[in-house]
Length: 299
Image (cartoon, rainbow, N blue to C red; front, top):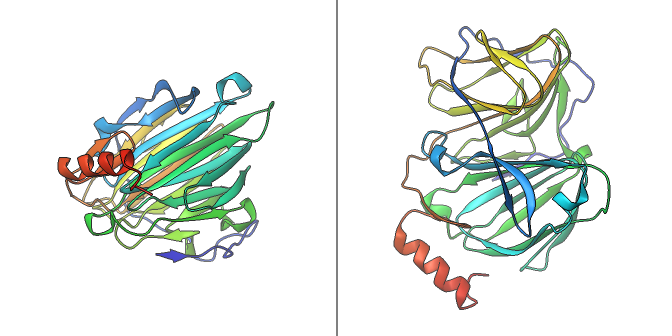
């Protein structure tokens, strides 16, 4: 595990622009499914269990956003996790979190919470506002089998902690994880090598990112429309990028302006057995997690 908070070049052009020879194409696009979680928080499940093997090591991506307090005010009361990591990225709003280890923090606009559930944690996420917009994303990142019973860990990053840069085309990039254009993100993981970028593309701009051929990757557009290898990817669509062994990265363009997440990672190629908030490698391990939770041994 590596923490790189503090490295930032906000407002400056990058000194290590990434050149690619061939961009990945869009394999397919999809829209998420409207659902609710926690105590009734309305959200869109963009990546679900049906895509877990195709987008390994990523297990789930939820997008939430509303200016109606009834959609989010009840939050996510105490709930357990085991076997994976959660990355919560707040675009707008304030969320208070507490966990069974006694940790507490306030996640605010532009901030990220990175939590490793490991062998088990029970936590809550409760909005700290009664009006206004609350918007953000929660990504679930799988842990390799050897780390699923590791010690729980978490870290809060404020907006000011997150590394940022602007490329020559004017695209503003927040590097939550991985490395982009020579700038390391807030967090690095050796096993899954996640890349997590928030891209703000002004009208007529573009962005290139090198990607290892074997890594699974996708783009989620949450403002405007982008274009990838001639395919238009509209608002609230997830574009799965094809695993072309000849492609060395991706080129993303926007004619009218857009905001999008670019996420990629090295697949674990391990079995995935999920039951709600428990993600393990075998059914027996899931049964054990359920038993531990029921008997108060999870956290």
